[in-house]
Each structure stands twice: as structure tokens, then as C-alpha cells.
Image (spheres, rainbow, N blue to C red):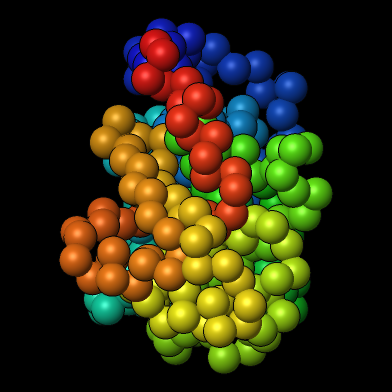
Length: 276
């Protein structure tokens, strides 16, 4: 399904030549582009993101940026992994930001490549603020966030006129790796018919309990979309009151997006990949 991308841009050695640089913003030496690579499928990258990959001197990429996306990188670029995955040794955020500044001040074109969208639980705001304070020029290139695009690949609309006029996006852990303490779970529980959660599988037992205690219907459907938009994407469905036990008894692949609410039922008829 994703082969069209390589077909469109040709072989690795010439696909950047197919892009007219005059149609894109100038990626100036000494600047940093913070770019969203989308939820995984390379075809969901924006053309700005694709162009930046071919222009960058240094590429600093996250754990959710797939190897196939990196095949479109400038072959002369330095690649630096800066991924953070729960429970594993990870580079510190401050160290990443300082390296971006260092490379920019060496007059390099620095690409900070993030899965999804830089400003949706991607800490792009923090990195941009640090760059601003250091006097480094930067550009933000939005990406398709998994909480929308990943659900769509599973046939789950984040909103549907018949079910919800509001949706809540939240993260399943804070900077300490624990359930977010700053979230008013009682208020969130009934604030919108649909809740979309990033990085929530590990703490789903606790989160589900908090939502039910806050007044959420324990029979609400829960969809877990793993490896969204990739060939090995999967969807698991349970109920909120059983979600904790479900993830404890089943091996749920991660990364995953968790969605709570009536839109989960649309996967039965809107899972377009099964119709290919």
C-alpha cells in the first residue's frame, strides 16, 4: 500500500532531484526545523518534511520515526537517535536541546524529526522555546498526529456527527513516567464522549479505574490501535470496566493509541484496509 511513495519519487539517489527547491522554504544553515514525520507510514509525511530530510546536515530523530522514513534522508547527513521509550534508558531532554543549539551554531542545517506532530505530546514546544532563548532560528513543520491519523487507519473517526461534538486528547504518563497527577480525572471522565490517549497502555488499569470512578460508563467501548498505519497494525477492543484486566492478560503491542467512546464501533464498518 505504501509502495506508491517510492514509485512517485523514484530511486533513493534521485528522488530529491525530483523536488523543485523553489517551491519550498529555504532550509538555512544555522537553523533548526522541528518536523512531524506522521504516525508511521512514510506516505503520510508532508512534502515539507520530505524536503527537509533531503536537505538536512544533521537529523535528530525519535523512537517513533521508522527506518523506512530515514531511507529518504540526505545520504551525507549525520543521524542521531534521541528516542525515549518508557522503562528504557533515554537521553535527557535538556541534553537534546543543547545539542540542537550546538549543531546550529556550527552552521549546520538541523532537522529535529519527531513521530506524529511536534506539538502533540512531542515536547516540540519546549525545544522551540529553548532555541528561541538561544537565538537560534527555527521552523515548525506540523505532522499528522497518531491520535487522529492512527485511528483513521483503523476505521475509527475521532469525531462523528452522530456520536460526538467534542474529543479530549491526553497523555497516559507525565514526565516522571507515572499516571499524570495534573489531570482532573473526575472532570475528564464525563467532559467529552470520546477520549483519545497517547502512551496509555502501561497505566491503562489505573486510568480506566479513575475514569469509572469519575462517572464514566464502564461499558464504554475501548479501542487499542497498535503500530498505527504500519503493515503490522492491529486493533483490540474491550470495555472500559474490563480494560485493566484486558491489558494485564493480553500482550498489547506498543506503541499504541487508546480511544474510549462510541466511535470505536465504527471500526466494524469503516475499517477500509480490510476492504482493499
